Length: 435
Length: 98
Image 1 (cartoon, rainbow over the protein chains, first blue to last red):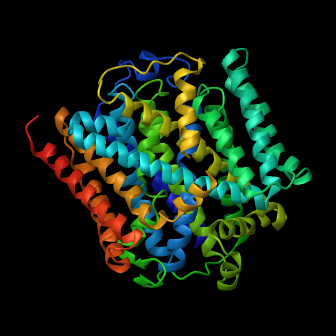
Image 2 (cartoon, rainbow over the protein chains, first blue to last red):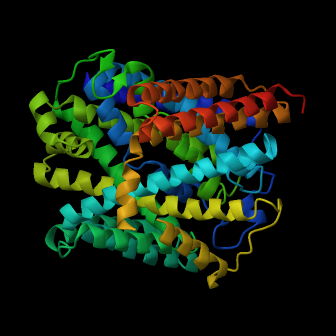
Image 3 (tube, rainbow over the protein chains, first blue to last red):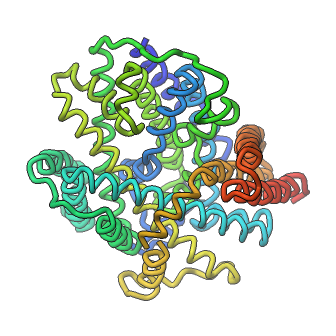
């Protein structure tokens, strides 16, 4: 049954991309002859035309935090895998995909402005301001939650902290070499993807010295400050591109393992209409499985960092709709991870992240990967995505504060001056101190 | 800084629904955007309606179960008012002749 669920989901998503994705592109009239904000406002800091494959990695890493893993695991545990699976399929194709695609497209046609600013122009000044403040609060909430999760992971698993530091270092070198123009993307990818995976071994053999959670919060915030103000092509974009490799590897290894492992489903297809912990199936299934089906956070990313890097309009379909569907595949994989565990294994697993790692390690074991290494690999991939979401969030918060400050002067361009401290540092610092 | 991180986590349960509500507003904005351009918008309208209804029901449920005097209940009510207002003005924009 498990291979059927994964294969049929992948096929459905593939067809959806070909058919419904094309429908969306045609309906919206994507036009490559129009100049995108990345080109018309190119500044090398935020607005930077980027090839679709790199941008796909950035967008996907940014939207795929813990959400597509935690949500499906919780929903499947309390409501059963059946309703969760159906909502992931329907939601990702017809709701989340349209939402992400639409947000990026509107931003593209509005000089790369955020969804809140677009709303201001279309619906009204007051509604736009309220929406902007609402989005800011939502982002701060996401930053708080992800900061806490990341600091917790680094405190409890020093190996993951070492590996994360290694990724950042590798990503900066990758970004600088790519910007130099001396090497092609494929040449660098052949060198740097293995280097990224090397981080797993380095973390395993050289775990970070033990630091308190408070110290990790401080260090992580300092990193986020840098990620929010540095040119996107130096840190954020290459890090996300390389991080996405981790997830592709997890999905590929997991899928092959699932096909060969012969594990059976331990979780019922349907459990109950109401759960004591989550509430009623309607509406809480739709709330719990957010990122894997539809999440408002994606609209901030799509109209924030992503729309400022889209090189041509036709890339929008691949980058936004494609990313959403791949996130759907990840959500289905997370669903499979919890579905193969027995009640005892699920209860001893504890957190959804640990349950995911245990389930994934079962599939990896079919390929001869020891369970301990499998769990470490899965945990590392999740923590990588926590950090990519966190740094993108900080940058997005900076964008929104800029828009809020210049709200009274529509059309005024943000006075960027490359590396110069004001205003980039002041905005970055405000995020830092605010957080 | 650290204490604000800890206290902020208390808002978690009442801020998960607004993240979904945010999706509804983005979809509604997309509907208005398509309407202004003269493009058929049905494919974006029904997901918008679905994404408005689900978090709103959840917010109402949370307000009732936690009580209006609690942090979660009070925040839920504030979110319901904000949600209703933004939905109404967006709907007006959809209905108006641009």
